[in-house]
Length: 399
Image (tube, rainbow, N blue to C red):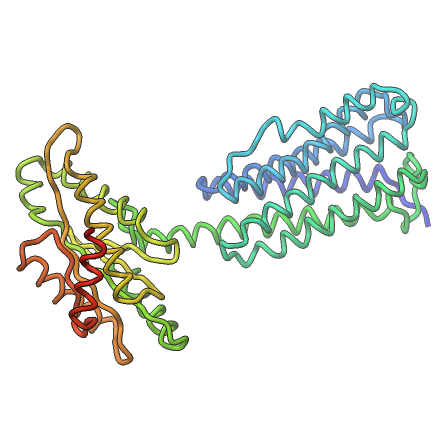
């Protein structure tokens, strides 16, 4: 059975154009997702490249063919840029055009300039490289849980492997360059396979943009806008989850409750702008003193909390005092103004029957004791370590 390749190619161009417009519309609705615009650009470049290849004969030296092949190399590179953008990286324009530049340089060098099959193999190799690189980028960002990630990875891998197969056939001289091919040939199937790829990836790329937007909204609802720390809602929900997990695994869990000393005086004497700077500075210091698995949250006003899963009372005390000392040093002066800002800390460690509320109350009682005993200190909630052991830890850390 013979099929007319120019007709199939033009049909593919039409579908690619519609898919690119669809992605541009999706990006216009969500400008916070530039990856969608990069993907739209890749799809539209493909839509331009395909007709150019139908305008000339099978001589690869024809200008329209050369431009079309260069655009075919750029199209998957733009998809690779979209994947990098989705991972939070700035796409590299030199990287986008590198494949096309390599092909253009190579085809000018004998014997490649005299070997159409070698030119085709290099073209297909460049395309497969970018497609598989895009799949690798999405795989690399898998820590962000997106349901749409896996269909995109699957389509990119399958599409990339099909071009790898085509590269091998071209190197073996098994691909004919012409406008007539059997339905079961590589050239016959690539147009149908590309239609599935273009439509499928357009749908899932747009869906990913929506999914990422929903995740950002959820994160914003759980984040304090001033300090970037978690808010009370995030802290309570995470504490409930971690408390349950630690209890099931027999692991300890500790909570630190912070209150910035004399914070009202900072606002009264230096203004609320300075007070905001102090809050941001404390959040920055606290985040730098804990592990990536710990959580720092602002509960309200000048009150913060830290959740330390897997941390016992003694090690939690050390973390609390480290934050206290680091903050006092960091906020001794701010923007040329002498502040000598300090923080008081209450430490509580979960017991077998602890709840979020009881743990917060225990840490709050310890915090109250820290403020009553002179501020700028760490106190531990009951039940605490035996007094000699706790004193030993305090003396050792102080020294």
